[in-house]
Length: 94
Image (cartoon, rainbow, N blue to C red; front, side):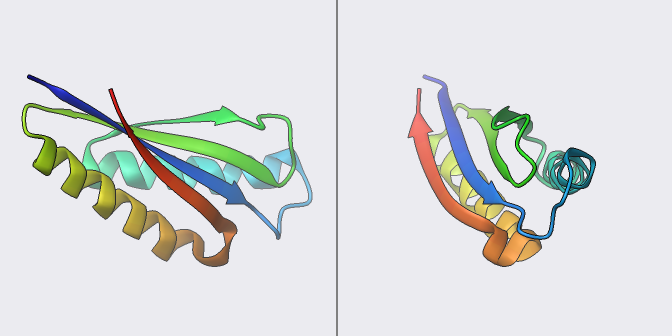
């Protein structure tokens, strides 16, 4: 049975003073996560906020342990890129 894992990243871009600045940070994060981990990534909430964002990364695997390893690696990498701007995370399974 396939496992679908969803990692939610709550982000507060403290240094952003415009949507353009925030979108630059979020786009860079999404591109890096897609390229490095081959996951689907999308910004899903606070689209019009200058500093807040919710980004999700999704992976599908026939092995839940493997999917969990990928999502934890994505989370660690996002934390290394964002530092204190990453304010919360969560993993859900479908």
